[in-house]
Image (cartoon, rainbow over the protein chains, first blue to last red):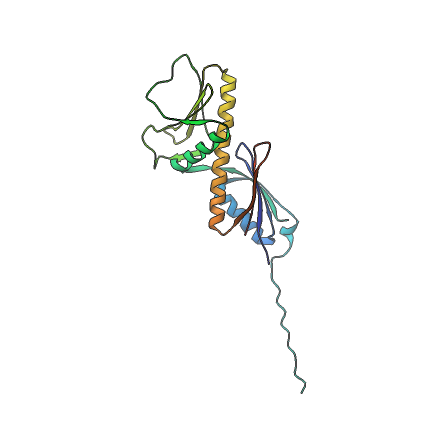
Length: 68
Length: 149
């Protein structure tokens, strides 16, 4: 299960650098958009390796046939 | 591991939130609050005025001509709001050069933005069920916070 985590650094001039971890794919984009909405203006965005991993869930159904 | 974003805070808020940030920033730099007085700044004192970039302060919750004044040694700083809504910073010193006063003004302005951004972000993330798992002030005076859902 994804557990989003942010490492936030706020410089003494007020600039923020936030490392978003623990989320993949479009959820990562949503988190970045949320942070931008809270703080103000986005100056730079770099997607890292996890972003490119799919955020889809796979469900496997199995049926056991009763032979008797 | 996700994404890395760089953000600039926009201080579009009401005066009480700004005053909280001012008090926090001033305390962090060793300044103490001083009561506002009706005395005018003596003309012989050197004064440098600036404003905080990306600030747009709503006057709600602010008395007319309200200022926050802080002092440390021979330096006095007055914070206010101009007609355009910008948060103003006026640094006054008796034994300082204009360059020194300007540097002090720029530093405290940055720290005000830092305090504002910290409180805004942590408050909003807590509202969304994030928890602060670690926070510290570094030697370069940056603030590091780790939050987790």
